[in-house]
Length: 299
Ligand code: ARG
Image (cartoon, rainbow, N blue to C red):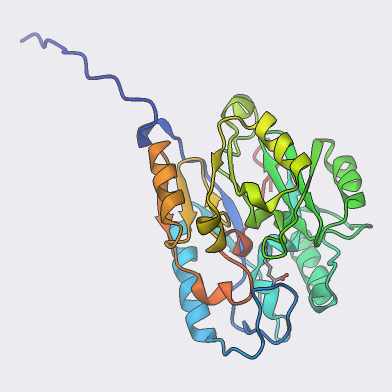
């Protein structure tokens, strides 16, 4: 019997099937000692109570969602007295198996510097000790083959030169102007951080225009004409503090406008509520450090 193939309707561009999820390897830290005892960003209010068990439970849903969608999660042991260690994005910046350590602007977190570098070293990464002040992937985002680097509140502009030298990549400095969006990863979400061939054409971001000065906004408009511009309302619930695998975008359930924008573009929003961790001024992306291995598949 001969089968007559009728041609299937073309998949409309922008549907979820367009987007290819890429495997990710993340470093996370269970917030066993999470609390807010100092104030180093406008979200933190030591007088307000925190619920560590709730923070752990919410964090666990993020961890489990990553695993359920096929990603790998490594864990670093939490250390008593370092309540912000859960925000592993600030633990370093890792590309091609090379881990640049951090040098915090804020004294309260300096105790995390050595533990993160030790973790990288004992997990096969080549560690570069930082000279200048910067707060890792909280302020540095790899988009295609370019690093977007934030300054204004935490990382210094001088550190961007060091960053370019260490990784041999183009570094674009962006200035943050709103203290509530003090790390770059609170104002930009990298949606298609494809590395390697084809990466540049698919590289795309979402951002909060009001978090940047005019110069930086002009740079973003020019380089990412297709970017998703996120509303102040969605920015204010930390909507941009999101992680993406190129298809699934892990975002705050409160960022409903951003979720709709993502769906229109064929991404699948995966809502994860980290309300308790927002009391420390961090969200999904802050709790996630990407471990990019060597291109040949090494560590
Ligand atoms: N309390 C932490 C701090 O102020 C929150 C860090 C959030 N991390 C991030 N990648 N945005 O340093």
